[in-house]
Image (cartoon, rainbow, N blue to C red):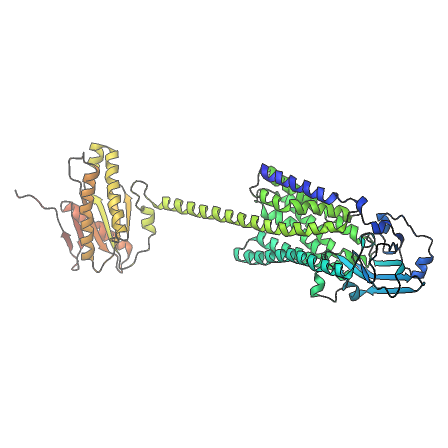
Length: 568
């Protein structure tokens, strides 16, 4: 467990170092060298150009408005046509106005599906700037849409070829993350149905939602649905991540052992899940009610994050066996998720490329969590098998005679007898004097010897089953073409009992024999067969012991293989 905690802390430290290394001081120089005009309402170029509110030393928080104009420093722009690479959002319109050395304005407007076709992987846009004739002397860029700072603050000039190469290479990386998440989602869905495992099914649904979030937030969704707008993409991104985060509480509740969380803690997980799910309607609701959807959306995740951290701490303190895999899977997504929520709430600014780490962490989480769930399921299966085996052992113990290893009277009474079965009752002759004269240990050895003989008889398929009914009385179930053939087998068994007893207790100076009664179950059933076998045993004892009796076909008792007597 200490190694898991050390790994968890190492992941957090490494991610924080990676995230905060490129601080806002190293932010986009194009923004820092631009002049910014932020307004609550959209302005035409002439209105913006004549405004006295231009800020040529812009700060990042000043860009968080619904509408902005920027005058860009074009000294570093490529020759000829080029693109302005920036970050997208729920934008409605982007306008580009260029002025050449003759004072002629060249304006381009991108909105709706035309704007979404400018997508770049990782929530980006590549806005083309057409240079007609002379090189531009001034360049203005306008963003209209939901308040957000990244579109205005993250700007870069690139050639069309550079943008295309970046689009292809980054798309492959995001597609790989989507493939991992989609594969895990499909695998978990089938496994959840096949195994009826709630945790697997929940994680499958979570992975599917995160795959949708990755597709929408990385803009790959435009490959499948090119008619979507940036607003549609943002709404889909908001909704899928909110619903995915809402599932963390139920996943945690079902993943850990039942004893880990009390009822109040489980209810808190469900309550925070409901709050996170509300984030799915933030963006559409902002069209009806005036509020900052982006900040509200991120703040709704905070209760769920607190419960997730609390749950991990509680599971650790209560010594859950599953906490190690859970921590390993969620260390990176949790760290980056907290960072993203705080940044999304407007507390500070960092470049949006950090979001790509979040996608990678989610894909890694899906793999690790799937492995952890598989290991958990395997552990549960082993425990179930052990419990089943133990139950079988206890059942066998309850139905087995401890001394001889044969089945006991309880198993005998529970047996379902067939008409063709033949019942034999075997009883040792004059067994009490052996216990009294040589002790109960000697008597027990004799009984064990009888058990071995009868057990071997069953193993060799000479008998169907054997029981110790109590004391020195035994029962054997046989089958055969006739009761006479069964009598021959049983008489051989009697002789083996005598030989085995002599070998087991050589100190006993008297011959140990067994008498037996035999009866066919037939149509009259087991109770009548038991009475008949018991009566036959009584006749064998009365006739001098060491013999087998059974009822012959003419309703008389046949005594076979009586002990040979010496001549007088």
